[in-house]
Image 1 (cartoon, rainbow, N blue to C red):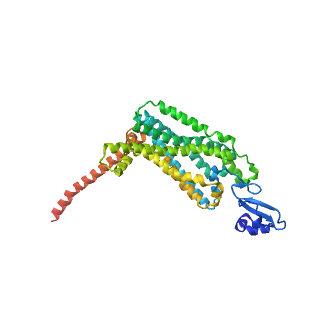
Image 2: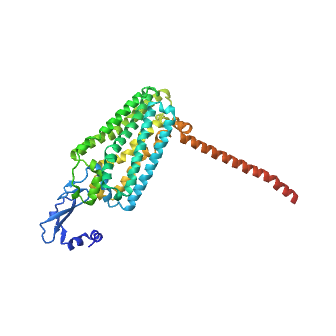
Image 3: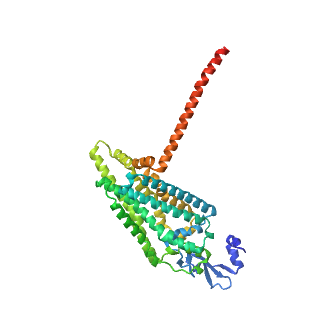
Amino acid sequence: MDDAACVANMTQCLTDSGLKYCDAGKDICLQRGLCITSIIYSNRSACICYPCYYGDTCENEIFSRNLWTVGLPYSPAMTPKIFYVINSIMSFFIVITIINSVLCLQTYFCSKRVRITNVGVYLIFNAIISFLLGLMLSIQSITSWLPQYIPEDYWKISCLIDRKFVYMSLAYMLGWSIFLIGFERMLVECFHYSLYDSRKRSFITLTSVCIICSLTTIPGIFTLKNLSADQLGIAGRLNIAMVTCVNYTSLGYIIDKIILSIHVYGTFILYIILCVVVFKHILRHRRKTVPAHTTPQNVRIILHKHRDFFIPLLASIICSTPMIVVNEIMTCAKVSESKSVPYIYLFGSMFTSLPIALSFFTFIYPANVYMTAFWKESFVGRCLRKMKTKIVCKRKKLTTLFTSTNLNLTPISTRSHELLT
């Protein structure tokens, strides 16, 4: 029987080969693979391990828990059509991310009022990191369309860049930059720091963040699994090449989890603390200055007037929560057995990337100062204003022409009517 026939009727395929499934009480594969035994010599058994497992009895996991997405190709729902849909949507989000990052960067650089503040330095840093992440993701997206044509050595190098050192460092920096933007605004709002204090503070802080985020990726080098690719099959060799630099031992996974928790959960908690502290400070101030307003009125006014502070933090909190939960509960084996995980991964990734993909609408659009800088000082804003002015002028000319034409036609029609009568 050929491979397709064996997939359709495994029992018959085994029988033709003189094999059968092991009896229920003699399954040695720990429910992690198919137990096969000889029809004649029933005391001899072997295991065909499910994806994500290896070993004589499938006792070992190929991938550490941080690599649960490796199981996506093995999911029953991951058809070629679903793969193309996921890749297409994520590619669209990557393009939007790059466009928004460029819009933010040119707004910040063109406006001196933004550049000379500590908040402006953090905003520029955030936009640069978003742009770099967008470029890296675009390269990943291009290579993911035709992985079979990419050399194995490329995947090993890509693993070090995309999964180990560069990408993760940038992702950590992005999270801390959002916190620093909110923290600087809190200093100005609650502790009366000057908006135009020396930028030395922001440069020193960002330098420290860059160094720390880069160094925290180093410990995982010494705690990697040393697997023999020849024992894993073709698919196993391909997957190992893609993720070999972050496939941790049990100890390595614990270390990686601690580092990830500091950068992800740490910033997540700090976002919440910032929102609570600033909100309570402003609410207390409003109760003193405007005692006639009720609490709901104050809350609505605060969220509206200070939306440029709350939107980036709340968007990061809300959008990152689903994927954080998924990362905690998923493993490679669970993914390979589930039909719904590809859809969960798609929507979770889209939701998580929204604050980054729409950074212009997260940081610039809610702030009147930054929107004014965009329209009046940035290159794109000025071009859009000129286009709008030309469109308005052409519309006025057409309206005037249409009106004058009607006025010129009216007397002619009137005289014609008089002559006829």
